[in-house]
Length: 275
Image 1: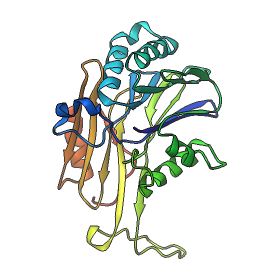
Image 2 (image 1 turned 90 degrees about the vertical axis):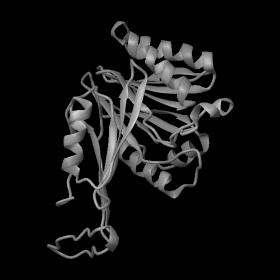
Image 3 (image 1 turned 90 degrees about the horizontal axis):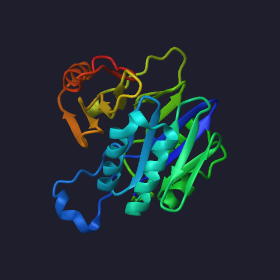
């Protein structure tokens, strides 16, 4: 299962999803070393983003077909193809955002096919959705904050990891960078230099690592005090997905190595000293 939410705000479309993966219970032997988390938001082209819920294998098959036909399809055509795949497998659901003016969002399930230029849609775990959408503030930033709090609380077993956010505007889709820092030594004082500390002293912080150019796939995280991180690499047309992991590495070293591996520029949301 998973939880994904699409919403529109100030002529921009947003797409948010967690990282927890689901598998076909009848095919567990195929996944002896199956990962628990993975990226579930992808860009089949520079103006469209897709999130999925349900069995990873079937969703990836559908996304591969979309990616190999995307040059001949607009967002409505992509949504129609995903609708056929959703009905065929009866186990996968999709959200789609179209960044062309006016921006639009689509909900695609075996039983529902809907689109709008306003409001929000969700797919995945209904209990998690009820908890997330129970607040009065449904702006993208508020949703992202509550979404991550929900994942951190572990109240719902079927969702987990980090919130991944993509946004679409002016015919371009890209991942929304994020950075978080926590200091056990912080006290609210004027002109205070915050000491975020190291791992042994309880300091914690991370930054997302995302492609610099809109429409490029891949998303990751670097943990400053842990000198480690990971990046989800994706080639949709070839149906190739890889989790790149680094350890005992500072942020800049990870960025330099990733650039060589990926063949395109990536960027961190922010930096923390010499970490």
